[in-house]
Length: 433
Image 1: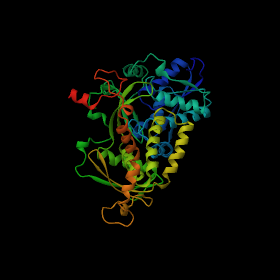
Image 2 (image 1 turned 90 degrees about the horizontal axis):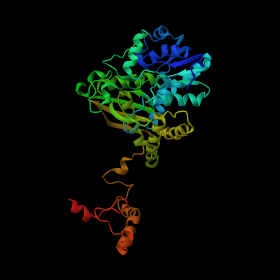
Image 3 (image 1 turned 90 degrees about the vertical axis):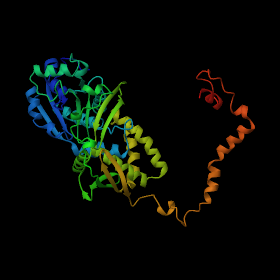
Image 4 (image 1 turned 135 degrees about the vertical axis):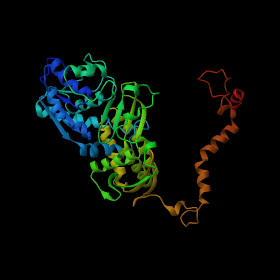
């Protein structure tokens, strides 16, 4: 933690939301330092309107607003998708992989401006504090880090609203609508407020992007996505850059109620939290990419990639982007993507993404091998020998049990046996029934 009075100039990761808005006057009041704001344009759209003027009016000496959308998608989002990384089965990591990019540019601006500190608005209970600070430590460990939520007397969103009112800082949040939101080109997330009760259904007005599935069109939409080496390049045959492509898929997904997720997740800091996410275009892309991999990757590589995806997701979620392991996993993933080229056809209908077709010049699927009709490439009689060899360990174990039953399986304990005893026999289970 930076010592008050020791900081001359700090660069703040600024979003214009409630937390970072009040941090500008708080830094000046408590550290007496010059404050420079930096906001990464990752697709917040209207949230960026007037952001520079707002930062200056709040006390910042300067505000950078930089368009990093293309870098965000090509260097962070798409590699994570290619890895098949999904955190805890549902979360497509929309906030997680935005933070290392923001923090990287934050460090670069601090060096450019001659600042001796960086600051962020992540809370002391969340994951983002780790993601920001690990990136700063990896890229410039000499920079001091200021995390106001771990220092100030503001204890919650209501206090922050009062502080904003005291210093005439305009904010979007209100006492009635007090969600903590994160928005970028990939997703929109909501936490806090009524969502803190996991039994409470998310209010309908919380969803700012997508139609409710029940309100989506009654007719399905078909979409074809073309990938080259694992990267999406065309929608319905039309070539697009990454930003335009994701924007178009977001619009299509939102119309059909795609990509809503209500998740109670395990935070890195040790507690569970509830997040409600909208990831319309991302959900479509993940589904399509996985379909091509099913078609083009051999069994062992596909199964190993599933393991890599789990570890990759943990690294991204935990803020470990700039690490040797993540880079090494990327090298493996990119090797697997060399054959992932082709087209996937999807049907979108009332919140569902249904795979209805896929084709690739690198497909390992052979219709002439799997057909139920007569073929010249597979002799079904060969399966008998294969099964005998594949099942040989099972046969040997069964023979051993028959010859030495007491040695192979010790006598079972009674029903009251402790947890360390052998499993109960079928007879004991029947007694329970």
